[in-house]
Image (cartoon, rainbow, N blue to C red):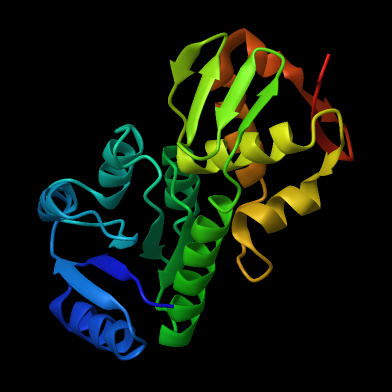
Amino acid sequence: MSASLLLVEDDASLAGITRRFLTQAGYKVTLAISGEEALALIQKNKPDLVVSDVQLPGISGLKMCEILKENNATASLPIIMVTVLGKTQEKVNGLRTGADDYLTKPFDAHELLARVEAVLRRTRDSGAVEKVINVGPIQVDTARREVTIKGRPIVLRRKEYELLSMFVRKPGRLLTRESLLKALWGDDVVVTPNALEVHIKNLRACLGPSGALIETLVGEGYRLSDR
C-alpha cells in the first residue's frame, strides 16, 4: 500500500529506526521533530497519514492533533498517536481530539505497520461511495465529505464524520456497538472502553438539536431516527 507518511518524533534513535522500517515497507516517510515543524510541513504538502508521539517539544502531539482536526483542510487527515505505556488519560484525550488510532511505547515495528495499513485502508474505503444522502434535516455529501443541517454547513472530525456516514446509510436501523467499533477501528485495534461513547457524544454536540436523532438502545447500540 503506497502512501506518504509524516513521522513526528523527537527521539533521534527511535525516529531513525521507525523511518527505515516504514520506508522499507514501501512508504514515503518525512520526519519532523516537533509539532511546529509538522504543522508547517503539512501546510506545504499534506501526507496521507501522520504518526506522532504525544510528548513533543513545544506544541504537544495532542495539541497538534487538535489543531489539524479543527481545520477544514486537514480535518480528515488520519493520525496515529504514540504514547508511553500506561498513559490512559493521554489515550482518552487523543480520542477526544480526533486521533484515529493509538500505539503505546515500546511498540513492535510490525504492529506499527499493521496499524498504519489498517488506518489507511479505512480512510480509502470510507470515500468509496460518492453520493448525497439526506435523512431529515441532515445532508451528507460523501463525495465532498461535507455535512449540512438544514442547509447550514458543520465541521466534523474524522471519526464523527465516519459515524454519521454509517448512520445516514442505514437510517432507522440498529447499529450494534460491536459493529461500530469494528468499522471505526478494525478487529486488531484495542481502544479504551468509552472510546465509542466519546465520539457519539461529540457527534451529537456537533449536530446541535438534530443530535437527538441519534438514539441510544441500551445494551444494544445506536440508531439514527428517520422520522
